[in-house]
Length: 415
Image (cartoon, rainbow, N blue to C red):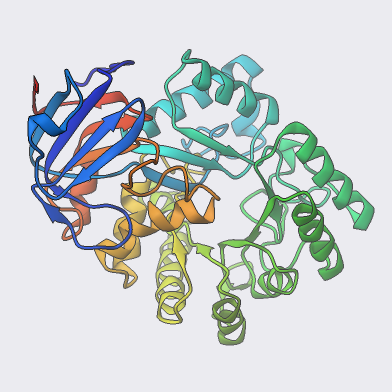
């Protein structure tokens, strides 16, 4: 049984069988991490002597466990239920119900070891209220990186969240409104998607509109993250110097996909990271909808695309699209297994959900690695995920900013 401990002693030494620091370096055996005042105060290759530790330091011993940085899911929608329904039906509820749903989703993610979520589109009022409640300690949830309303054409994918904009002036105004609201980044819907009546195999915005929205985001020092399910929309995003591509699909028709080597090469040359969200199709396929054959084929295409992008050296990020269709808020574990199936090593998958993800989100100096001075965002799992990613779901401890949010085992004592 797990418990939530909102406070811990001023200093805690966490000892584990293996420590994986999120940089891609090999695991350290019998390592230890000192947590003090919510931050990482020391990283040790072996347990230090008591005389070297702060007074009244608690020691927590986690045998048979790997200690890692808290996971980062770079693509979620906390305002959506992940139960198969999509907008508008999924959000046809009173605001209080959607707020409660967002709170539940955040709590599930945190207990799964995810200490940072990047929300790629939702209701600004719900998202800002959730973040404030977490900051005040009224709710449990990960650190939130928010876009608010995704910027989309009139009637475009995710338009129900209030981000419709058209024309050069229209998209610039929408960026400014996002900045006024407090968006951490700008989400641009570059093609249609799963929203009914949108066209996923052609660009939504013109190349000029795409360039205008990305430049305006950069002018206000915000990253521009582009949803794209077709090669042409991705080409527009590359030309506009977008900061990241979400999904990076290659649809050429309603049920057809054709990998575009030229566009893939252009992504590689630009060094723009890609978040592939492979697991979303996997969860739909497993749910067994009437069009299950389409989703089975989509999953195979997405695995092949991710493998090809990886071979080209394109930085891949771990993002699950949690909340969309049937994707739950612990879906990052499945996402990492599928990235491994696409050719990434287990350690490369871990980095995609820790150190590299933090850098993409602009949080390199905050979280993502086990490094002195960073926030004490830690997760402990049974076994060695750097050898078998299936162990990633066997979470025994979650710590965010030095506070326990899950602790299912181990021994503790005062030193």
